[in-house]
Amino acid sequence: MASALDLRTTARQIFQRTLAAIDVEAAVREHMRLAGDQLAAGTEAFDLSLISRLVVIGLGKASIAMARAVETILGDRITDGLVVTNAVTGQAPARLRILLAGHPLPNQASVAAAEAALAMLRAADAEDTLILFLISGGGSALFEKPIDDTLTLDDLREVNRVLVGCGAVIQEMNIVRRRLSAVKGGRLAEAAPKSCQISLYISDVNSDDLSTVASGPTLPDNSTLEDFYQIVERYDLISQFPPKVAALISAGAIPETPRRSAARHSHHLLLDNRRALAAARRIAADEHGLVVEIAEDLIEGEVEWVARAHLERIETLRARHPGRTVCLLSGGEVICPVRGSGIGGRNQEFVLRAALALDRQRQENIVVLSAGTDGVDGNSPAAGAIADAATARRARQHGLSPEEYLERSDSFNLFQALGDVLLTGPTGNNVRDLRILLAR
Image 1 (cartoon, rainbow, N blue to C red):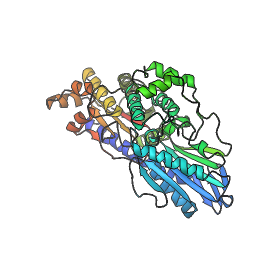
Image 2: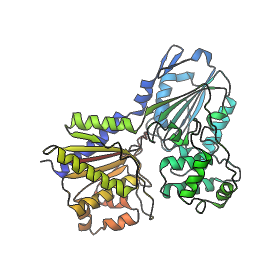
Image 3: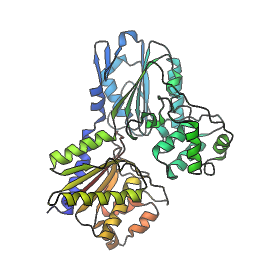
Image 4: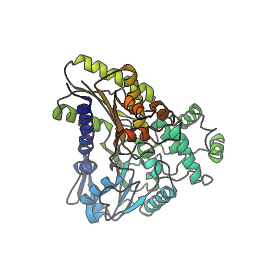
């Protein structure tokens, strides 16, 4: 029978192999090809002999890797561009300006990056200009400019802090962000309406909702002002937002976002959570011989409920396949409001809650791993964590109370003390979280 140690090793291997399988540069090169003057993006073709300027603008956690691939394909055809990210992973592109900005909260560099991109786009707005947008998760904070001159960077930082901790899911957060931004909800693309535009996406949101990736800087907003005000009311945001933001909202002075995409603008999804899960399924089944099920319905939800639902599902899967090692996979992002001043994130809290439930129920031979594909979980340096039924007992043997760590949102420090954090560093990718449960 497989031991908990064997299951831990297997879960770690599945996670690491999945990260390698969803390589950003490979995805770009597979989707975009150049033959002479003909540039193919998926099934679409663009004649570069008709283009006098080719501008590349990348924003998000995967933008460096995307830009490297694009630079390999297009070379000196690129006339201008910039890449906005939070960390340079690997070699930086040689032809593009790199700007490091704030995440998970915007900083002054985030505003400077947005202003630089807007200026670049307005200067290049012509029919013989091709603009290539490289968009990935994290861009909401990395790339920002207030919609109204009365709002400050500190106001936007406080808005983001409130949104991250209020319990809203990412789609709801981005609806609010779009309405308060001069570069989100299609407003970035609107700065160069005459140009031909291609947007490539590495998605960190629910499937097929590209308007939410980085708060949709190049796509028309599919939400309404009514949606915005309902979210504000649902989470009582007026009372939590800075006074100038609250006043703007209360006065009904939030402007409408663009409702239509430019006629010469195409959008292409390269990687998302579904593809990560498909890769993990293949690795678990083909390389490790596991019985695999993907919990497609367990995407979002309150962290405690999602943790319990996963444990119930893995028990059911194990009962159906006696004598086999089974694997339950899921992706997405749990809702995990911050309660204390500790260090952690939604993945580590999910694992900690699962560990406590395993301990209470004495469920043996189950391992739980949850980690972000971007390599960063919340305000911690870890991607996530791994645990089993012995985790809570081991903590108490070391004089550590798992319940106290949970109460102060300090899951990272508990798992670090136990040697159970997953440390990858920033991966240069971002397709949401990956949860791996194994049982025998």
